[in-house]
Image (cartoon, rainbow, N blue to C red; front, top):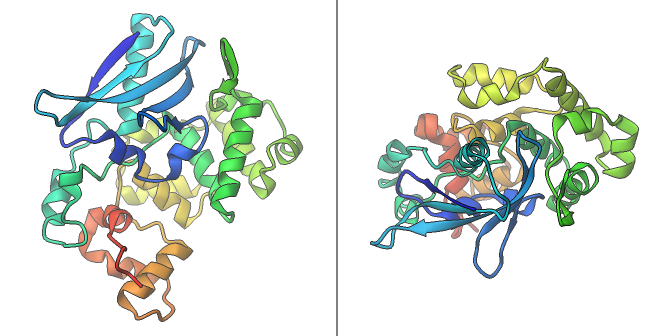
Length: 299
């Protein structure tokens, strides 16, 4: 079965997929030959399907959206669910025109509209994105990849006919385990109680994470909600805000400190205040300006 999902132009699937490292975290993957984004997903009906997402071009050659292929047959409701999930993952309805208008005046960002950059790859659920963000803290990127793969391989639902391919585990599935098991089997370390508490709060209905995706709360209030989650600090909250399409905060980590130091302070040590000051003029777009800043000629 094949579905077509339109995108607000300009759009580039490769730009979204390459926006950050999420594509390397299971169950996301990228076909090295075609560039297609692939993923195993469990639908609300319980059916587990493999999705293959490829860019569709209009007659003029510009990206106009994506096609989503699956070998499974889908009901109308399942087809709509896949369409909605893909639209969210790729930010297909995002309007970045105000940001592009500002970026044209900055040489470090001037080609963003031309390259259709600005959208960030997201997971279908905020639950998955919060868990994966927690997995990025205080570890090397290889550790994040390993922990995500362990959660998927041990707790994800298998794809019929290819059980080695699995979904990201649902909150219910993780809520049924315990801290010791997550430490031992998924090797989550100190993150285990955070992931377990999040899963149990979501599974019980005490926490409605998905409602935050469409929340009209001011960003400062939304940030407070994210900071209230165990395991989510300032960096993680800023990262999650960007995934939610809120760019008021810069996700400051050691790499940000290093690059801002080299770009504006001659290599002298800087702190979070200096990083935020460097992008303050971008206002509600400061996080996005930082994320896509051209650091290529920074020493």
